[in-house]
Image 1 (cartoon, rainbow, N blue to C red):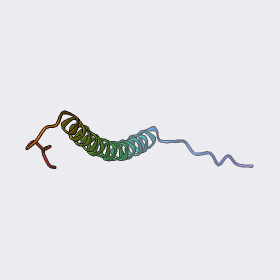
Image 2 (cartoon, rainbow, N blue to C red):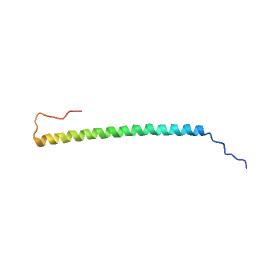
Image 3 (tube, one colour):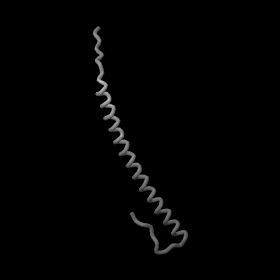
Image 4 (cartoon, rainbow, N blue to C red):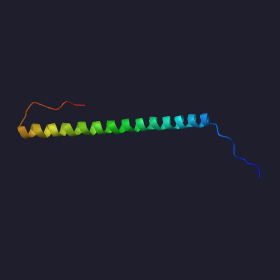
Length: 68
């Protein structure tokens, strides 16, 4: 039976490794930026609600939170 195992080219494998890892990093950064934006918007809403509650508890008048 003849040997059918070919010799591998390490440069091709390194190139494919870098490309695959590069695509993964791009997707990871994209997903992280979406999660960060979602967190910032929810934090903003929380702070506006908290400020409104503090103003109501202290009896502030004519003062309002900054709108988005």
